[in-house]
Image 1 (cartoon, rainbow, N blue to C red):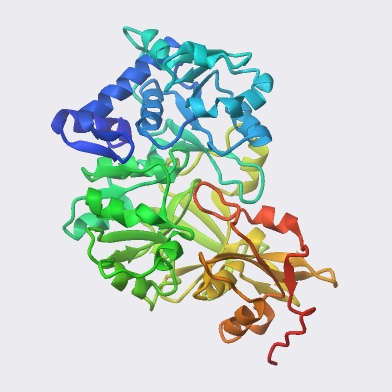
Image 2: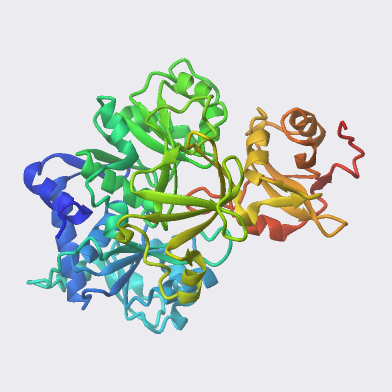
Length: 534
């Protein structure tokens, strides 16, 4: 049995450095390794008291906070499987997640009871709801058909001699739902070996330590996704700390970094653009942050690095596979910003065309992935055998992402296959359109999608969120894009919006945007008579 998966790393840390701080929460204070491990065992005993056994699922609906990690690890010490649910889900989405989990026990924060009440009647497997942050049982009488218990009652009924079952690296760490950007979310069966790096290597975050810094990681990331869970994994591997805030906020980001001495963080989606478009300050570069993991990379990454006095690295990954590509340390700059890096150690990849044949260097193909040993990859989708069969092909996982490779082995993300736009015989990357649009100084973020044209083929449509206090004329944007995009990729439709629909990991839900179609808010370049140069 390996000793390198997370439960054992935390157990050993509690023995070797019990008073070292592992968590620092803006809302909850500090927590030591010994306090963390003791809480995990306490939660294991309480779950055992509810009859949770090896292989059972435990659903959770919890915000960022210590308790989300206690629930996860408490289940792990019983070799049970946590199924963390997206706290933004309601109605059919929430019912889908809870019903699919098959859990008899749901652990939740009191604030989510109204959401649960909407769907509880149809959850036939659910027997007990634990409202861990409620002290008064009378507050829990909300008319649900399921037994509801408060936090004190949960722990009062804990087993005196819990049936602890030490997990193995082949056991499931959790069932993590996909973002649902292209349809109904699927529960990915993630083994410990996939995300705990059972070979003992701490992955991309080791670059921070190699800079000579302690690993103090800023993580305003949700616990129902691997961005949140991965923070604790990295801290345990690198003898570091995790600094938590319940939500990413641009206005307090740098205050938190300075106040807690954070040396590393993850910047995903539009977060980098949000930070860059804040008003410059004379002390922007005076901060302890040294290593930033950024995905995707900003085109003007050198300006970001200089302004904030940081180094930048990057990865490409998915819940299903981990990190298939990784940059060569903090070597990302304007010469290679578009690359996701090289193939990560232990991975094998292929780029294939629609017939399954490998494409040549420089050509675009769909990414297939496998690893050695195979146990370091997902086990498929929980209770969704048909969906599992669709993503596995002769031992290779089919990512649904289009990439190209250069002659020295750098890989470049082109687009999600389902997000690509085809117009006048040209395949257009929505990702590359967005990169160009986001360079405009008045654009905060954007999303490019296919819109129906008159001739039964795609037209390019862009949804745009302007920077606060700014307005944007579509004609000005077209002028800005003409030297930056091929003629066929210049948007025909532009729609200004207040916000874009997103997943918890800041991915834009483009399927929702495609469904919107055009409206009286949509600007049409052809109707406006704006001509493009030949």
